[in-house]
Length: 505
Image (cartoon, rainbow, N blue to C red; front, side, top):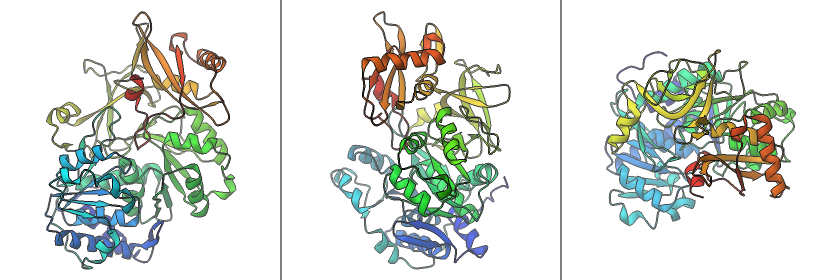
């Protein structure tokens, strides 16, 4: 990518490039309230910057954003960045205790919260003395600001925004990103891999507070002048199908759980009613069966990739026309990846599992207030992913589970993801999660938690059938010795299965 200049403000670039290109009258966002042109977005961003200054919030101080997806979310986020203030994007599906932790940890001076979410904050605000302002009437707040704002004199290496990691393995961590990081993800992934262009209409089921969704629906469309669709409600199959049919997006971004739910829905639209040219998946490994069935149904490939809060967006991805379902593809240009064993030695043999480490220009600066965890994850130019991977002779990487999820069965490593992928190829299985459990001899064996498709009931005979199904697909020692049926799997708000909760069942 072209080098980001030293004197640089991410909000000035992402908005200003569209005005300079003559796109002021083009629709930037379509949300539940209507549409917003690039010129209107620029004005809202400036109003947000000025209104924040009027609250006596200064450079590098934080504000928390706990808002449902809308053009106003984008305006507050970019307005803060333009003013040199650091927005902290908060997950909208957390508990009051989670919010208290994040507000106290970040020292946020103001909280911007959508009206329906305010009830989750009212019990805990008295315990958050740094929060001096709570703004729930966002549109009124923006209208109060002057229409032209001077940008803060930031540099590419200044602190720009924070995201809290989704906490699939414990307490979330405040992940600090720089001004140069947003545009880098667009230049390295969105343009060369997605081929995103001005004529695209994009729709991300993953929300803006999620690193994946932030790139999908904010950075990428603004980088090229595309139009983005935002949706406040949860991404149910009905809500997603409505946008896919009515708004005709050309790029659709989702997570494996949602693709499975969409495919299981009786209301799946005919492919002639869709205008999709490309779909992406991240958050967890996409099971091959889901990818193949999606392509059969729609004629469109899903580009499965992996990103992280720490790296901001996708650094390993399948490519159009070269998709190999069941793999996460190859490194994105501008990123290097390597696999290391438990002793930190490089793994070079094809097919051998190792921890995936990444080097690239979007690695976070640190975890806020977490020195030891920062040192453990960010090691010189390399960032530890905590994911196990293998690579084949053709250079395709295959996910093998989280480092702390791997099972050693009969002295051999077993990837829970591999067992899960086998289970969901059974016609009655909607979702599956596999963890290790001890048998009567205190030996670890796979245990599966299964969610059935509508219309199917749990039974002992079905358990036996599922076990036999896995035995027919995988090596004998990998089949689940126990199967428990659930109505839903515990997940983070970003769709990742929380296996640590299942291990305690």
